[in-house]
Length: 90
Image 1 (cartoon, one colour):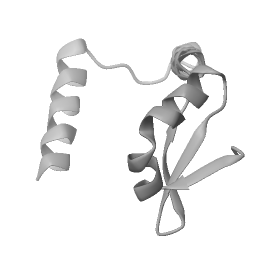
Image 2 (cartoon, rainbow, N blue to C red):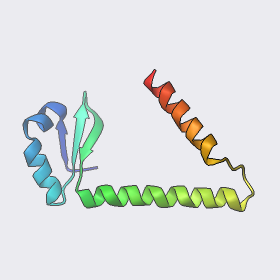
Image 3 (cartoon, rainbow, N blue to C red):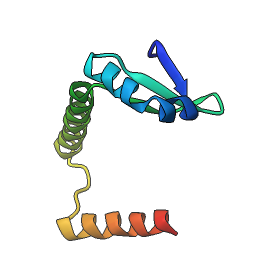
Image 4 (cartoon, helix red, strand yellow):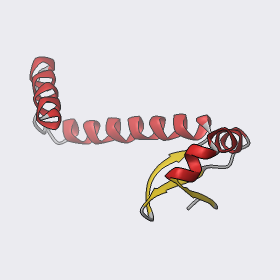
């Protein structure tokens, strides 16, 4: 975990400092009631995490296809995504 852990209140009061730390390569973990809820991270770390997630999802999709697993059309996928989003909003 990051060495720099602050509460939401502290993060709000010193946001510029935490952004500066992130630019220097040091993440800040933000807690609410002692529970980590967010982080201010260097943008390179954020992009690397997004790329890793994309690679993982692509590998999982390739594995399903290699096993002749179930496939769906784009319209079915979009319908499911929008249905999930509507459920989350409710």
